[in-house]
Length: 95
Image (cartoon, rainbow, N blue to C red; front, top):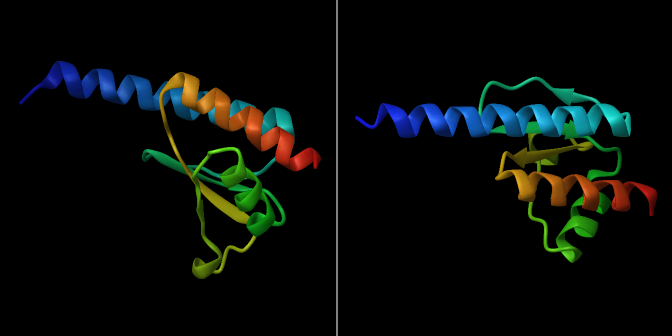
């Protein structure tokens, strides 16, 4: 019954989705459009990127079991978490 909380949660999620997809665009990555609280991004060797992110304390979900071995599923977080993920992702992609 807390419409104000729901509206703020949606606003934060929408802003996070925008930040992540703009980051993916900047990094030259493809993603699957999503209306939820997560997005799947195509990173190439998803298993290696997953491991690299784990070493940096970033937890995402590999989705190779769903027939998408080049994708990672990323939950939308708070603004600082989203930025930290994008920085770590860029570092892993460069390695």
